[in-house]
Image 1 (cartoon, rainbow, N blue to C red):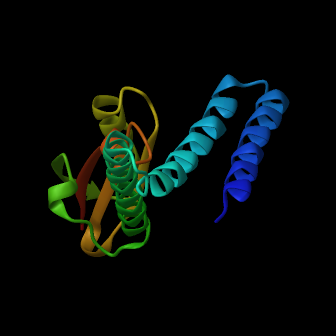
Image 2: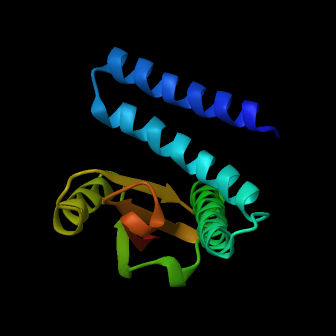
Image 3: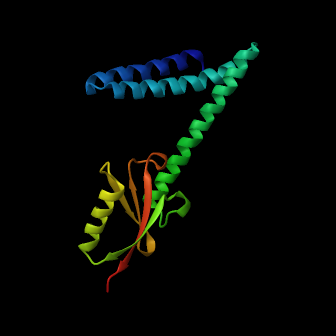
Length: 160
């Protein structure tokens, strides 16, 4: 891409941030778009600056490029984990904070057990529950992404 296009795209991201920040009356919305704009601009700056004659600029650009690539890879990994959590037939045990054991599956009783579990382990309130194969349930509370949440597993057994 050329410099003109980079500057135009940066300006569009900033304009979206300002517009959506005003419409939603939220500094968070504005800040989110500004972070995205700065993130994309840092990647293009690093790519251009790696060809600089100045050694210090090249080193800085290399550092920014490494951080940029690490953040992109981290985003891909979090996306893959989320897709596997929602759509997978199982869930890897090493990503789980704790296996809380067996719950009895007697119809209405398991709703009360999940509610009691939520009160004990998820004080912030929100909890997501995903059913997997063989009676395994993955419960996540505290956030949508793995690194910001607590993930637990439980096994539902038939009471019959």
